[in-house]
Image (cartoon, rainbow, N blue to C red; front, side, top):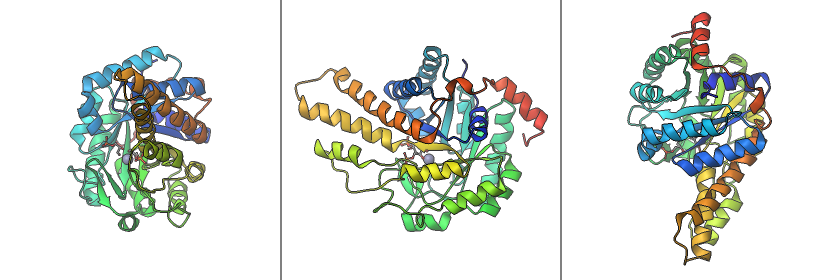
Length: 345
Ligand code: G3H
Ligand code: 13P
Ligand code: ZN
């Protein structure tokens, strides 16, 4: 089956009250881990690549790996999504490369660090929506600014600073009307990376009420939760047990994500948990078998460890069991739909 436009999957998720994990990839093993988890749980999937991932893996390798994933898994609906596009140009080149969904993150300037103005965000998002929808491609936007910093992407805000940049529900309503985006990433107190919270976050820290209010105002816009890794202690412990140095830290509890899903969150971004699983598995092999030097000896366990964490998230978010029920609409179908809807763009 051809790669699926993300809007089709998120519409289906909304109709059936489930959330979909969007897992970041940089290489073949990570794509294989996600596909294996999807096969074992009958889950539709969103595979996403950041700008850094595209540069690391080279667009062409990534594109062909994704086509291989689709060829080998004809029953699994697969979305290929650009994570945190920093400019319209990044989104356009992703569309050229065959991505079926793009994120125009206009909450930050093109440097991916400096918080932008609302006007700038509307302008760049609208520009991307016009081009993307004319090709049937889905657009995710972001309003508000997340905390943390992930290899150069992110405003680098601390937890407290991030709380000053939460998404304003009234502005979100205006933003979606002005841009016509399909999905909206909201800032509710999460941040990218492993060091999110110094203690287990409560309802005070993660603003679920903001999600509920945005969903009330925008019932047809799919909400996206970035920075949704749970940073499980078991995974951190494995890394530290085998020579790593990750200090005490807490992520977003799965139950809080499930609450978000009950209030309109449809896409849940997870990268750090996969990174932790892979690193722990590799460190274990290195520590226990210092004589080994065949990459397969450590990449296989790494792939399995990532598969396990992805599988657990697929089950928890509710996407498990739905792969064969998602409509198989193409970019052409979506192009016609956007045209008929007279949507912006
Ligand atoms: O949002 C950030 C994702 O975790 C991707 O991170 O830019 O290091 O590839 P990256
Ligand atoms: P984590 O760092 O929590 O995995 O978040 C990933 C993310 O939001 C990618 O866009
Ligand atoms: Zn993100």
